[in-house]
Image 1 (tube, rainbow, N blue to C red):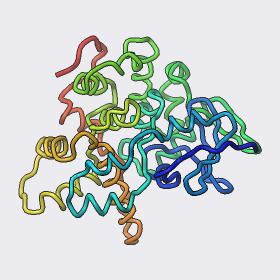
Image 2: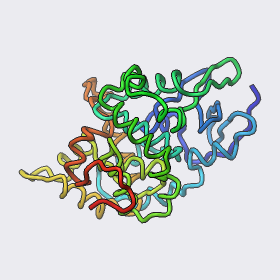
Image 3: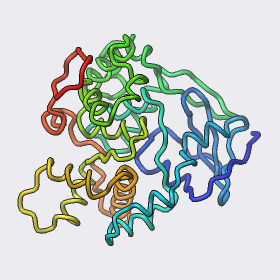
Image 4: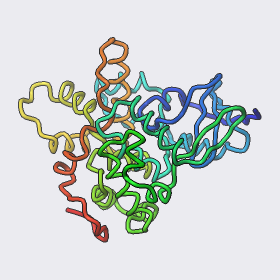
Length: 313
């Protein structure tokens, strides 16, 4: 396999791929194999260098956000003990720039699922509906296009272990493939309007919307609050609060963690999950999401409707 070198200072490939952002990369040989869009890619790390599939240097630089000024971003984090511990532990972790449809569909499928289950769903969708790709001796599958998903039945999708998520994924795929929900055009929207558009899609609540904003739209202020992060906020930042609403947590997160809140959240999230793993206690009952249905009733305060011409209130 021919590889090209890519400068990657202040980057940890393995940690970034294991941080709950993406779920399809596989550990092979000395590195990892996966797809970036439709392109099969192998990448391995040697110190401050990545060695990646020949011809994919620019693709890899963009995907792993190697242009983000990570030192400056981390310097903007609040100077509290927990945040600094997470910063030290997660050194080199970067926010991945994900394809918009792939990111949206993946997080719709992830509600109430453990990381390993999400990986299984992602691989099942890819094998059943994606395009086969090869890199060296390895077979990979791209994430299925929105048209491919929209053309299937709910029964087809349920066979990939989606359960009730199949209905939401299919309905959202139909909206996106028809152009009624234009994911690319939405990139021009302000954060508040983008969040409202996303929350109007079937299966998308505040947590999913913030994940998609952070990972697919590079809105680095977006701060997804899942079970892990809610626990961290309650235990570490509000230890004496008897009544703490989700609205108060969201307001606190938006102001306290600032313009790079998404990075701060990712570091806190990965640090908390890793600490749980090392303690031997299996608390990984959820990734970023608890329930998309409850989400709809919470921060988004929006119903699932087909008319997406204006932001929902």
